[in-house]
Length: 547
Image 1 (tube, helix red, strand yellow):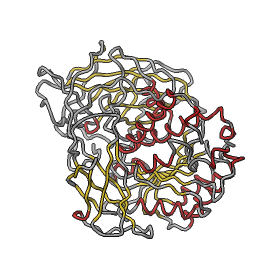
Image 2: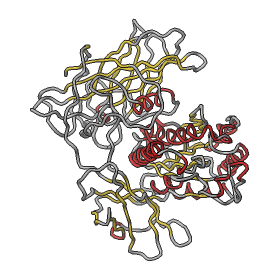
Image 3: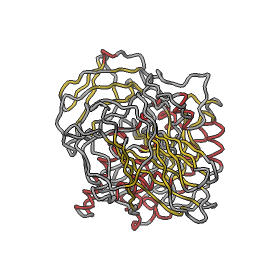
Image 4: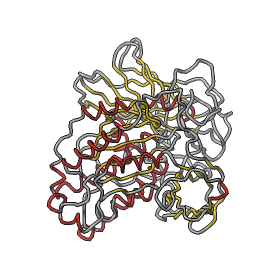
């Protein structure tokens, strides 16, 4: 295997523009087993033309009756799917509860989830503290506690708790089934007063934070194969009259909507929005536009994002704890249907509408309304320059305390130099380019280090691009089981006590993270990585990352 290494500097900027688009990648690797190789430094090569594989559309949805109660006893033949009015053949069908965690296991982290219940459904509760009045957020937290206190000590569904303001994206508690740990995290979280929510000058920042929060959750959780039920407690978008902003700004927002819907779809996230403002919205507190537009903003509003993912919008009620319970209940009642679209054309701006009908009268299948065809992952250009979208995605992963689990790897410091790190990236998350002219297949990784001081302050981002070439004997198509081993020497950073490592597969855009405390012989692994067994290829009995 031949490897080339190059460096690039991150552009620290926020933006919703896409990076240079290149063809999509082939499927991730499957078992065969090759020894790790050591990279040698040289110049990167240009992008290669690769083949596209057939995409599989996954529909997660809940069936409700006329009273809004879930129905869980339907059979495959009772569902009928159309895409843009064209009938589709249902290839796979899963009933609700099929992958609920077994009672004899307990989930207390993302690593536990990936190893013990790789297809289990999960709940992600997000507290929106940048667009919501302080008093309303206090009521939302009270309602969440009220709902949790009625639950058994061990929750049926692993649940994560996140809080977001304009300066911070904080995982208050990683996935857990321990009710008391979520309550404890909620009690120890002190929210700042969101004064920016009352000033029009901060509208752009609040919009950006909403989009980035959704996309950060999607990018981090895409490695988990199970369905994610995301419950957004707060108003989501600021109220804005789009007729008063420029055409370019409108275009940027709609592009961001497309990108966000796609990423939520790919990560199998269904969004539920709960507005804690209650029955009446005071225009003096949320602005005069709040009584003219939907409760989650203007056009496009946050409701449209929820509906696009197959979720619901809950508002205009004071029993927020019951609304939370409805969202949780729906999340445990999802059917999953998959089909291969009959439409083979590719237009990234054409929204494909999905409709699902049922034979049984009086029932409704709530699922996502459709999707935009895949937009390719953001990548560096031929000169190694990084666009704003790629830079922001890398920086989000590097600065977050949320585990990214789509790429499994282990890392350790050299016993003689703490600035030299030894990586082993497991094959399942790696996508390979397929060049023309019978050339060997290749893949590229982006590896970034973000260092922190003792107080948790970010010190420096340092990123490198590595290119790996598969052996000439590797098949031209299909999966490869080639783990990637390499060493990287990062520049020393004074006062750094720990680093977060991000490994991103260039072709797919998927990422894994690991946190390493500096010191001789220190080791760490991404949440989806287990300790590698020497000379043993990865198992291929389950689609979940197993090393």
